[in-house]
Figure (tube, rainbow, N blue to C red):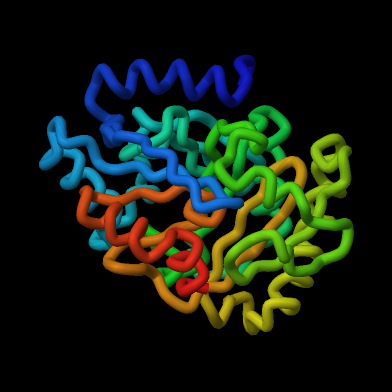
Length: 281
């Protein structure tokens, strides 16, 4: 692509909005402080609430595979030999990208060096966050394997201060309020994509073992979330998909949560968001 990945996404966004292929979900953002943690709570906008709620429901519809065939109006480009990059049809965050395996693979399959290569190709052009929902209990909305990329600078994430405290060895981070394990990345991780993807793949397997997430015949035997940026890699084991009817995907564990209405928001705040996240791991 002659344009950068983000420039291409922005260009395709304009045409996809005009033709109705892209259907953004409107939200209202609230900052919730539970010292020492800060969370970002997004609630579906009451303006056009039915429309926004319907789009959230459509995004979780498993009856058809939206990636095979994919909507050409949402196609951003190829990313590596085995993946394509698509706009997220029902995006809450602008320029939300999906890195989808060209051929069908289950979302419960282990990530491969090729998946990490696609992730690093994305991060080499976009200073953002890659995340993966490994299984239904981890908030996976579709059965076709895909990683997701949002162009949010990691330092702007709600839990940025805590997420920046991983070391060079795989370990649990005591500064986070939920079960997890992670590792700090080399500063040159995106300079050699082939070497970087193999490095990440090996550390990913190490973190699965650290968290006692068994994996045989290329399948993970328990649900988990993965969050990856240029600075760190983190895995979060999942024991529950939701809390008080609020579903958590990987973004919840960087401090960004989506709720449908004020009732759900109030339930989370009453219980304590940190406590809710802990209960799901």
